[in-house]
Structure formats: C-alpha cells, structure tokens
Length: 382
Image 1: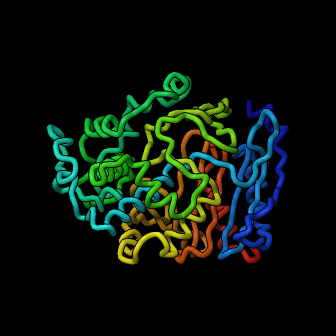
Image 2: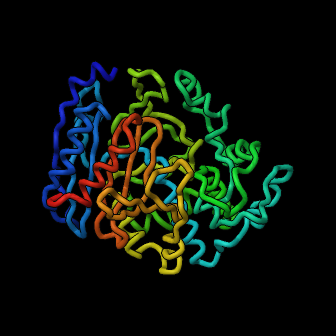
C-alpha cells in the first residue's frame, strides 16, 4: 500500500486561513524543511505542525491525509493523541484537588478498597501523586504478553472492536507483581492513569468523560477534543491513520487503522484532538489559566526518568514532562503514540510559545520529533 502511495506523497506545504482570535505568524523555514524531509524519506504519509506564539499562529503541512485519494493534510484535522491524554487526566485530578475533593496524598486503599485484595500490591502505600508521576510501581497492563498478542499483525483486525472496562485493564496489570516499591523510581505505566480516572469517578459519582468536559474541555472551548470511549470512529475531518501493526519486516505492509475501539487506553491514551486544541490546552495549563498556582506547582514537580527506558533527556511531572533539546533549551508538554498516529506537543514553561506536531503513521523514529522541536525552538529564524 505504501509503495503505491509514495507517488502521491510529494511534500506540499500549505498555509490556511486563521480564526479571528489569532494573527498570522512569520514563516518557519526550518520547521517546514523537517516536515518535507519526513515525507520525502517516507517516515510518514503526512506530517503537520502548528506553532502558537502569543496571539500569532503558524501552520504547515507536508504529504497526505489519504494515500489512496491524495487528499492533503490540512488545518483542523482530528487525530488520536495517545499518551498526551495523560496531561488531560492529570489536569482533571488536580482540578478536583483544588476543589478540595481529592488530595494528592490520598491512597488507592482509601478510594478503591478491595480492588487489590489477594494481590502483591499494598494499596495503602500508593498515593495519587505516585500514580500521576509514574512512581507507583504498578505493572503496565500494556506489557501483558497475552494482551500484546491481540494487537499485533492480523490479530489486531480480529480484536479492533473489543471493548475493555477500566476494571478489566487493572485486573490484567494486577496479575503481575510490582516493578518496584511505591515512590522508589519512575516506571511508565498506563495502569496508573486508568486508576487515577477511576478515582475521579469514585470521588464525583460521574463518568470520567463528563468530568473531563466539565473541568477542561468546555472551559477552554476545545471543540475538536474528546474522549471517545468505545466509539471506534473519529468524527469530523481527520487523516487516515496508517500502521505497520508492529511488524518486524524490513519492508512492512501498511494498514488503515483509523477505526478502532480505544477503550483499552481510555484515560491513559484514548483521546482525540487537534494541533490547535493541544496548543490551546497546554498554553492555558502552563500559563496558569487552568489550574491554581498550588496545583500547577505540583504538576511541575518532576522526577528523574533516567535508566527507565523512556524518552532520553526528560524529567516527568504529574502528567507532563520536560525535555532538554540538543541546543540546551528545555520544553514542556507531552506526547503520544497509538496505532497509525504519533503526536508531540511541547513549548515554553510560561505557555506562550507552543509547537504541536503530528504524523499519520506509527513507524517514524523518535528523532523526527526531536528534529521538529529543535527547528522550532533552537534555530535562528525558525
């Protein structure tokens, strides 16, 4: 499929009309070149980037949203954001902390009694803070060998519409022993954020998606952002999400994985958004317009990710991370990958300058996003 489609993927840069609330930004030639090189090197069918600097917004795109029709990538497309979802989930929890309904020092044993009975875990020693900064020691259900088998190759097609409850995901994790003692070290685990969202539901008596809407999406007017739950589609304009389904073949087949039930990721990685909404969200978050100062300080308190196998040069806070670029500049935000989709949304700590990028394929190297961030934050004239 991709070999045939490569004829359609001539790198094409586009600039589109901007909403009245923002003004055009200067061109970013170094960022444009990264987009064009990514598509020319077949690292993705298409790549987009949006830079927000105060009220100025620049948008660029290369390649296509659909390899069959040649439809170009364009502004406002919705896509699956993977683990960038964690920033939204952490924000919901911290809003409830600000409202006095939760404390970061609350334990799992207090809010979810009985869930860990008969396991090797000590729920009265694991706090909400440790869930959010990935130091709880909870096994990642996504590492369960039986679950992994269902998402690789042709098995994915048999299970693309499977629905998972949060309780089922946690039970998969709890079959395995802890990876470390609570608070001992950083270890990335989606299980943490499933449990955090379950605590939100227990504390509020409402579905997590409703609290997400109440505390984050509606106040910030994120019109292209939502948590679909078990709904397999992406409503509105969106690119085809292309995946190799984790093939180890040096020239793998590429499949359309746009439609799928992402309840297996839920509050840890199941949301849909746009580059514009991601920039708006993180700008408000880091700019102090979403959380009170006390909760924002908690979010920005980081732990080391060294020797964890995670993204090099990073430290992790509560649902956000900071990354040092090769030029020495540090940026803040989050990133996420899922079938056929990889996004990165980073920027300055004050929230003023933001860059969100997306590729509609899942085989690009991490270095591609380091390149686009470097172009956006380190290059003169970027």
